[in-house]
Every structure is written in C-alpha cells, then in structure tokens.
Amino acid sequence: MADDREGVQFISGRVEGCSSRSVISGAAVVFEELPFVLVTSIDSAVDLRHVEVGCLMSRGLVGVNVGFVGDEARTGLLVAGAELLRWAEFDDLLVGFDEIWLFDAAPKTVPPLGCSLCEPVRLDEHEPSDEIISWMRQSGCLVGLGDGYGTNFIASDAAIAAALHLVKA
Image (cartoon, rainbow, N blue to C red; front, side):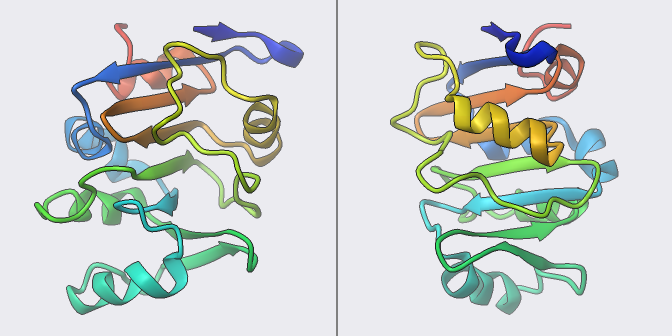
C-alpha cells in the first residue's frame, strides 16, 4: 500500500512466509553498509536493556558501538547493520516477533509506546498508524520491519523496499 501523508510517499505491506532474519540475510549487501539499526524487539522480548543484551554479550554479538535509545517506557538497542547481519547467522536469534528500524543517521527516539509492526498487526490489511508515520518522518527512519507469521514493512520509498526484496523493483 502507498501512503502519501504530508507529501512523503511511504510504502507498506506484508510478505508472507518471510521473517526479519530472512530479510536481513537476503539483503546482506544493504545491511553491511547500513550505519544504524534500532532494534525494539528481539524474539518477542522488548526489555532490551536487561533480557537480550546479556545473551548477546555472552556470544560476543554486541560490540563497542552498541547504544540505547529511549526511556524507561520503551528502549531500543542501537547497532550497526553489519552487527545485525551477524545475529542472523544464529538459528536461535531473530526467530519471530522481531522489530527493527533502519536509519542512515543515529535516531534520538524510539517509536511511540503502543506502536508496533509485529503480529497481530497486518500491514496488508490496514494502513500504518498516523503515529508510526509521524515518528518515521520526524526520526528520519528509512524502513521498519516487524515479523511474526510473516513480515510487515513500512519504507520511506519504494527503492529501499526493493533493495530489501520486500517489493519488486
């Protein structure tokens, strides 16, 4: 679906039978060059300050460039795309209900509390919320991905969605 709110064309939809891990692995060239990825959910866990970081650190998957964005209500883990690409190599990481946001400049905020791209949201049936569109516009977010039993996506333009193999070029 295309969405032209306030003059910026966002494209959104859903890819059935696809996970965020398969998007990451299938677009390795894009992720290798991507400077910032904001992770707001890993395998259903949203308390990224405590729950998942310890697991990632014990495997050597969180480097010195990791950071946190957000507040007590919602926190995201900020990593480089190449680091996220390494996570996708593990069979027990990024297994479902993951939410990631792609940036070319470091974000200062996380999506508003209550805004999610993971199941049960279905962007093939409904438009993205005004809150997500507004946050993406203000934060400079290029793409948001959220999976469950398929992968929802919203992208700032069709070219980046095509580069990630979410839509046909």
